[in-house]
Every structure is written in structure tokens, then in C-alpha cells.
Amino acid sequence: MDTIRLLIADDHTLFRDGLRALIGLQPDIELVGEAATGDEAVALADRLQPDVILMDIQMPGAHGAPGLNGIEAARRIVYTSPHIGVIMLTMFEDDGSVFAALRAGARGYILKGATHAEMLQAIQAVSSGGAVFSPAIAVRLMEFFAHIQPALPPVFPELTDREREILNLIAQGHNNAEIAQLLTLSPKTIRNYVSNILDKLQVADRAEAIVRAREAGLGQEKT
Image (cartoon, rainbow, N blue to C red):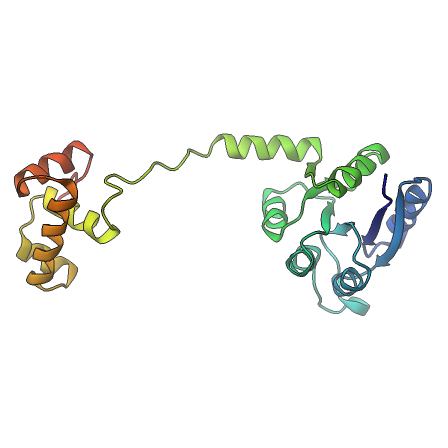
């Protein structure tokens, strides 16, 4: 098994000391660098190209000045080196931080209170291309996605968005002149749109188009 090259980015010296001691006992993990700020993490990641980074989600800039936090540092690292697996470390379980980390490209999000075994498993999983979350956060993610309804395909997908909008107005009972006024378009343009709609729906006339549209749920509200 290849050795996993690890970079630690955390502004707490004691926490880095603990991780360094833990990693030193692992024959398959090599600690290649340590960073105390987000800016240092980005620079070291670019130079050292580690396999995995343990990244504190909240870090100050150099000498306490404003700088990159862990999420922004992760975003920059993943953008330039997408092969690097970033695991966010945090004391917090708030949903905002979890999803911000995911959007930044992090492959893991674990609490600093995780056991040594959980920390090592996370490093190994991410180095192999997987994603890992502490049990409490995994449950929250599952609950969140369980409540997301799959997006329904649009009615009449053969129509453009503008054509579907006009068909909806037709189904509400508007004539071409009214639609032209509502959409600030010329009557000739509306006639062309209506002709395209009839052709695409393969209907004989406007009345048949209205029936099809209302059967599909369009035209429910009169503008």
C-alpha cells in the first residue's frame, strides 16, 4: 500500500501536536507539512501536493490578521489540485458549515471530538477517493436529502420556456393582443409563437391547444 501523504492545517498548536503524535504511529501515513493559517495551507498544498489535508474550518490570518478560513482555503486548493482530498475539521455541526464545505469541494467533514480510529478511517477513506462524515453529520445529511423532492420534468418539454409561457396565457383565455401587451412583444411575434406551439403540439387549432394545456395543469390562474 502506498504511503498517504498528509498535510495538517489548524491554528491550535496543541491539536496539531496531538495529530502529529497520532500520525507518527501509523506506518502508512506520512505527515508532510503543517499550516496554522488558511493562506499557509494553500501555499503548502500547492508546493507539497499531499494526498489528504485535515483542514480546520475556522482559522485566522497570519499573526491574527484577516485571512482565508478553512472553507475558502479548501475551495482554492480543490480548484487548483482536485486530486487532493480535503477533510474539514470542526467543533460545530451546523448545516450551513456542512453544505459550505461540500460546495467548496471537501470530501469529508468530521468533528474534532472524533476518536483516533474515526480520524484514521477518514484519512484512509478520502485518500482512496471516498467521502466521509462523522455519524451525527451523516444522519443530518440523510434527513436533509430525504426531504428534497425530485424535480419534475417541465410539461411539454418540446416547447421553449417562452412558448410554454405563452401557452399558459392562451390556456388562461388571453387572446394574442392581450398576450402581446402582457409580454411587451409585437402581435406578429405572438402569432409566430402561437404557430410554432400548434406545430410542436401537433394540434389542429387554438382550442385543441387549450384543452391539451389545461389537461397538463396550465392556465390555472387568470393574469
